[in-house]
Length: 209
Ligand SMILES: C[S@@+](CC[C@H](N)C(=O)[O-])C[C@H]1O[C@@H](n2cnc3c(N)ncnc32)[C@H](O)[C@@H]1O
Image 1 (spheres, rainbow, N blue to C red):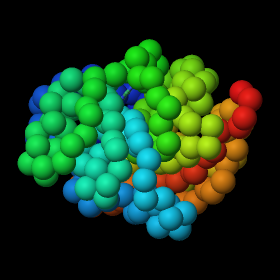
Image 2: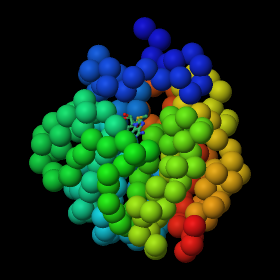
Image 3: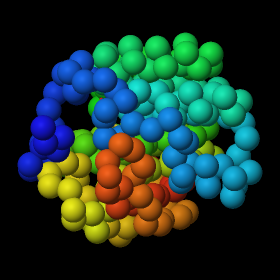
Image 4: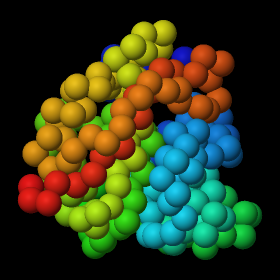
């Protein structure tokens, strides 16, 4: 079976995606902590705060953060993803607040000290990006950080799948409300033989949006 939709930005319904196969077979599944997340925490000596793992999926990154001592909320549009994340966090014996929530019509309150988005923004339709940016600015603490990981424009081996971004495009999309602190080419770890080329961006809210 071909895992990827053929057109960029066309996705199967997320509920079915989590219902129709074990989460361990999903392309983004990994029990290892994301390399860019780890590097950011270490390089900036971040050891505490309330993290939102946005689009938490199977909850592996949320569980890792909780084990590191962070207070963690994990949110996802798909009820089946949250059910899988609850199972995973129970097995791992970690406490994570897991909620079904569409970030484009969110009921989350914040403020969060850090928001980690590993693969949610890059699946959103382009017409909703401005709402995403406004929402994240509202949810983040004024001195908080947004850790954003999406597909890089250099990712060309995968047919279809998430939208791809260049560093200057991310800077432009977020420019009304965020400044870019760091931007680097990276990889999306998961179950695929070829790890897709990723763009990791660290952003800080502007005081006034
Ligand atoms: C590529 S997966 C990444 C999952 C997880 N972050 C990880 O790294 O394992 C993208 C996730 O975003 C979720 N998602 C898609 N649109 C969303 C939305 N509007 N609000 C919240 N979550 C959404 C999907 O259900 C899916 O679990």
